[in-house]
Length: 253
Image 1 (spheres, helix red, strand yellow):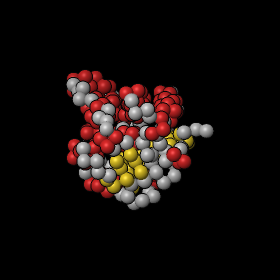
Image 2 (tube, rainbow, N blue to C red; image 1 turned 90 degrees about the vertical axis):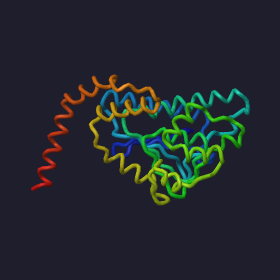
Image 3 (tube, rainbow, N blue to C red; image 1 turned 180 degrees about the vertical axis):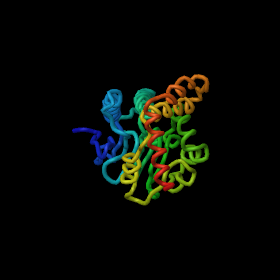
């Protein structure tokens, strides 16, 4: 029995949490399987036998209920779960192709971490989002909080954690933290966005690496000038520029 269903659709690698009988809750085996699957995708990207993007979703009506409480001890030993999750979200953030989460239904706790490690979250307006850390008597992983603060925004994060509100997808989308769609459409929209992705692969990879350093507040623009100059002179850029000129010419005709 697998915790993560993997398939490729129209050039998009689709990873779906596959524990619907447990509301797609994340156990450490789930995180390990997810990480191993992404590692294989990275190997394919390195060999250029690659997909153009990755979609992360959940089977059934929910994205995920978060950490599987049956695996948590309620002691400091639970930091191991946090460490495993942080390694996975770090891999997602560093992946060299666009990664989009498609969120329907419940998305709680660790599942919010998983979704907002992606480049974009497509969320149903009726999805239910919650971060019950304070209700459970814990300080959420500071590394995760830093990333969520940057991606969800301070106001939304305070509502979820300090006040303990449960928000719908529309509320999160109104703050600019997700693209909101009608119920049942998140997976279709995410797949369509990724299947039409047209960025030059090495430019996308470099941009994602740059954004990762900005997220980590470890940014020195001079470090990025050699990569910028390399991309400006790359053959792929010449091909893309030629295609763009031809397209512009047709539109002006």
